[in-house]
Image (cartoon, rainbow, N blue to C red):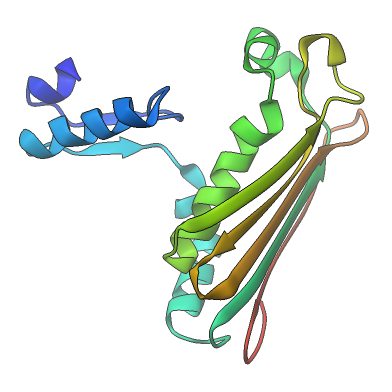
Length: 171
């Protein structure tokens, strides 16, 4: 907040704050000082996500009805050894937030409700790290979002699938 108050624009990493009230206070300070406050959400700038948003907003698939995202891949624990232990919910916090943001941003909607389940069944269950999660979001206009991420295997690689179903088509 001191950076905003001293006239600087601020880019923060997720999460923006530890509580909703702290986040709202940061937003209030940014607005009062005419400064930009932005959370780094890197998927918004991927060409495929940009195209997805444009096609949804242009009505290319009609009214959106359902979004399904699945991500399966190996976890590179050596890349974040200490952070992994501290987070205790790697997939939802690290990857899931970007997926949720990109989908909600593309649809220009906010969730009305959410249900999530995570499992620490293979990767370091001593630290409670989540190596799989499923998240379901309900949006206005009866749009349903299903996101599932899971750590599988020990080799590098990623399988990624994103589908948006609309009244007149899908992508």
